[in-house]
Length: 298
Image (cartoon, rainbow, N blue to C red; front, side, top):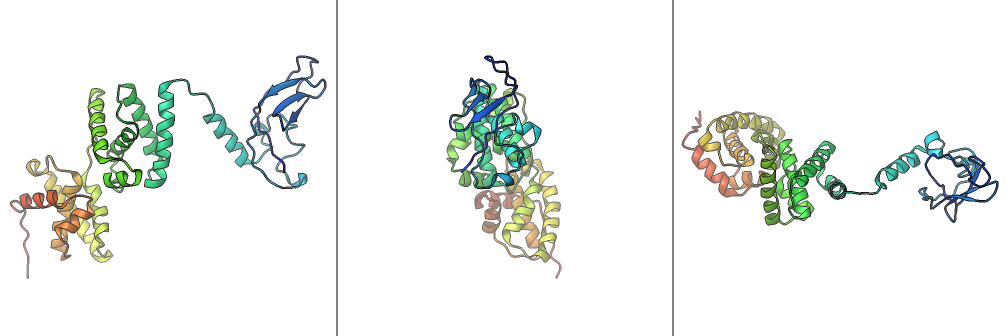
């Protein structure tokens, strides 16, 4: 059983005999030792390499293990080992400030959330940057809820309708009431910084709602086209639009579109597909019944 030691490019000059880079590596003690006089030149070298059982002739680099200082930089090791060493070097540097510790923590949380929610990388990076700015401005909501609140803010900004609040809460195990408190505090801090709340275009929810209803491909495109036209009208009427969630507006448009296209769905089914409750959708449909007329030709 052998291991490979990876260490940074350095010039080892022995203070005792003056030899330069004439060294050997003690694997058990993790030391770089002058070959000429035996003086320990460096101690505590990290063992980063994986374990394997291969004959010396099949190694990915030439020469005895550890004999060439800076194997990483000269490209004499496997690419995977090189990338691993660079990554470890990046994250092994000491964290000196509270803001750096916060960034490390929020990034670790978001990387975990990324796998569960299939979040794009650019959203993760923007969330980290925004959280740092808010934290520096005094945003001190509970740790996990604050991370999720900022993530949700960025998701809304990018109009990513597939990652709903309900899905976020369920997948990440966040208490809804604590999240709402954290989000309200976020909005307050963002307002002080001049950061405007994201305006979500309700149209981004239409494909998701239609898909969740399980409408066949033949009718799906027709329903979406009609829903977009109806939604355009709904958005143009401030009395109806103001104060309502974008997914509720989209749900009402889809309900009318299904009716026009001859697809039978209930208000409850549409509300569920929009990750909403039936009440807001029913109320909106009631208001729309006074201004939208559907002409049926037999």
